[in-house]
Image (tube, rainbow, N blue to C red):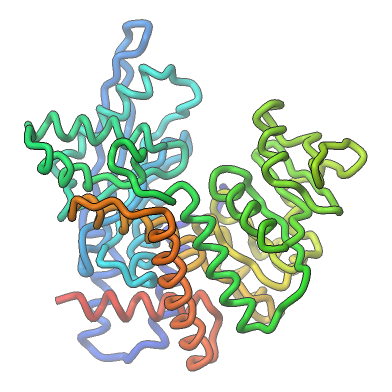
Length: 427
């Protein structure tokens, strides 16, 4: 992550959107309330390591705003987790749930840890310890966590199991309702069909809606920075609908394949090698002559129709915004573009589809999972994807129309839509 403070960036985005709202005394007071998290939880998690030593981990849960419903947001396990980062992500979640018109608020959690250094047993004990530490602050009608960076459906399952033990729930239906406290679970634990692909698929639906508005057709090119779950799924869906994905990257670097990569073959190659370098998989084969390795920074500056930052925050800055050649940026990461870069890109006529809209497919299907658990239902994948498509198209249209009405960029219009919805719900 760059030196940019993510919470300062989030507040700058809110301030810009607030300028388009009615400047009444009541609204200004509500905006001041919205600027600050309603609750910040800092926990210490003692974990007995495999060698018998007890190690103390630091964790957070930030509950930003619940005017529209229970707090909602992921839990990340990462060595660079910080309070400012979690605060920013909790705020963005409040905005994301509002722009997607979900009956949920915004929250976020994190533990300072490199999970790759833990054994499976240590990871489970840490996960259960975090669930115990925040147990009195979460619940299906209070705060609904989910997976995020380096956390999985399995980890959510451990946390659900720990919460059920703490609450002493015995009845099967009561367990099912309590399991709705966590979303992004494995199917066997009450997870929703389509959740793993939801963020990427939702991003595709948003992108297609915007490209139709812009009148862009034909064989379009794309570059995807990040090849984790979201980045891979975006690349896969783009490839399936006819895009030529010419570059993807992981933390160690990017690969550039002018003929277009085969996402599934490329993922198989990455898993086999442990990295993307050399995975120049185009068509039905992987061939070293088909591409070359470039840097993550160079990927951002490729001449493509659509650039998809799907890694970490603040990768598009005032330093490189003037060199971006993409016509459209689809933000699948949280906060990949700084406010200064936003201004530069807008002046250059580059459409930035903001994160709070672009990657809201994940939280939308998480909301579907929450609803299914509460009602004792299980929807088919087709039902989930149909509901997701309808939701993404409807809310993208709302943001687009607001941007035209206010004559502003899509991020500001998304924040205006979201802020208006939250302020109306605040008492």
